[in-house]
Length: 194
Ligand code: FE
Image 1 (cartoon, rainbow, N blue to C red):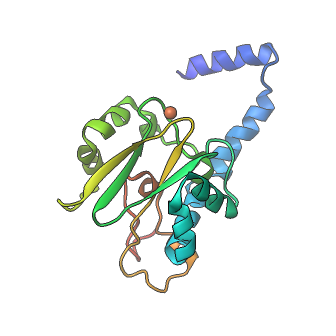
Image 2: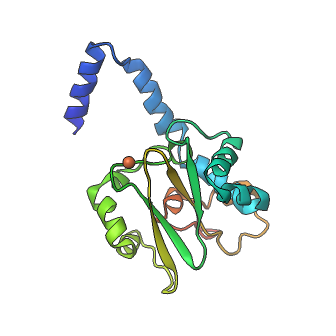
């Protein structure tokens, strides 16, 4: 795959269709400047501000604009839908077809998200996948799987951990992991954040 990508990049560069320097800027942007800390700030705001949370969960247009208020939007995040975990329902996000992922809030997808194993098993055996990630849910919690597409990207609003009353948004954001916003993890309990 690595060789194929490099061969393709060489051909496209030679033909003048792409500028390698521009490509480097794009990759650097998504690898080092845009990442899951953006999404964590969105989640922390939703936990701290009920009106923001309501707008974030209302519909695609409202979620996309609520996220844009914090400065996150654009490429691969043009249409966002946010789904909220509750004690009764847990959401898991996958792209069964390829690797669609909400770049502006989560950065680039991790390797496992793009793997055939995750893409097929998330649908067939979501609880098994969650167990592999170390997540065990109560019996009564329903698991709902969302299949991302090029048009629509999902982000999970994780359950707010107990014992976080009175924490600032910054403190709350530190508890929000990338995986908790994909649904393969839970937000950290206070005192366990790195
Ligand atoms: Fe995809």
